[in-house]
Image (cartoon, rainbow, N blue to C red; front, side, top):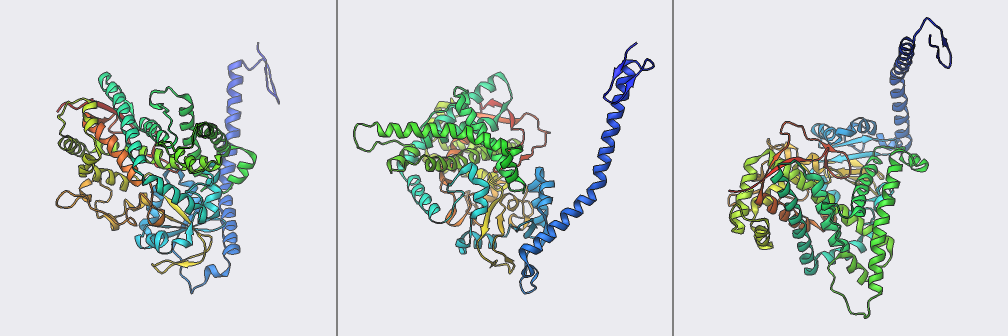
Length: 540
């Protein structure tokens, strides 16, 4: 005879252990069902309360002028609540909205959010009336815990100072040669890892390898440090990379979570993840900065040292504030690591899905470098020069096509500083968030034709096979106007080097050709779950 004790009841001899346990499970299920039913019943009430609060807040903030018939406002496609409900498919939700209107609004508790895929409006925002649209206090408040006061978060004199200093450094031959050496060195390491997997017929997770390879490259260019994360010999570098990714996800969530400041105050949820990730990042970056400053101070003379890395260059210019160097370094890493690795990942995915494109690229690489099929990785690497890379027009077109469909930064936002009217005749108000959508634009038929969603590199080539240029306000992967990406040519050069070396020596196939590939919602457009492929040596 067994007695089963419960906080509220005692079950006697008539119930054995199994019966008693079963009874408890049924009671728990019953309680859960009642709670679920209760919450379900409250759903309409909750939605009504939210709607009332939202409308009341909009009226209070925007006032009667918001409904002024003398001014036209873009159609309302939904609210930020809809964004939250669609968070895991947010970019597809934006496509749905844009198919209804090229420019539309989403309403939030404190402002309108205006989204546009109209190149005329985008040129106006990014160039014609550039001074009225910037990062503003809102973007700075969202991003500053992660990126500080960097070129991606500030406006005005701070932005101009960083832009001028960075622009000068990116124009020097020393940095170009130094970066080319770093790109090729790490591309060789990556190709060797792929070759080892090909011999053993193992699957490879290429997105992670691209992330590690580009982190190694960008840290060499920025810090002058060899992380060697691809071989896993530098734990601090791996921890930094993981923390950087976690911070990027957490800070993206802030744009849709109006409770993030409360969560930050109590250090809970995604804000706790962000704080921990930033702490790991800062430990690594500040350590590198301290070492660089000490090296500069310990020099025996005042003669300039010809060091190629960016951090050394800034220190030579007497920029020794650790916080300033930390912020500008992290902005370079965001621009140089994730964006390049993500583009390479989607590029490899697309050429795996389109084997004819993969073969055309491989043929162009062999003909341009004059290296026979079956040559060693080192033999091909020696022939990948800037001159030869410039001749690889089909490779260039394929990278552009990847960036059109899978831009590394899928949405980019601005803050409206004063009431304005777009060229399309619709108005925006001071304090509105105004965003253009590279991901959405790449899939719009009114911009790219009926085959807009098809991966077709030929659309970028003229009748002579030479690359055609598109307006940067239509092809917005690298931004446009005064804030156009300073590292654009560096990014293309790195992507070309990696692509040429890998596709010139290997054939790639998806590990599971029937698996649906999805994106991961963060500041940059990563492939959810990574990119798993098989590789084999290219013999002909």
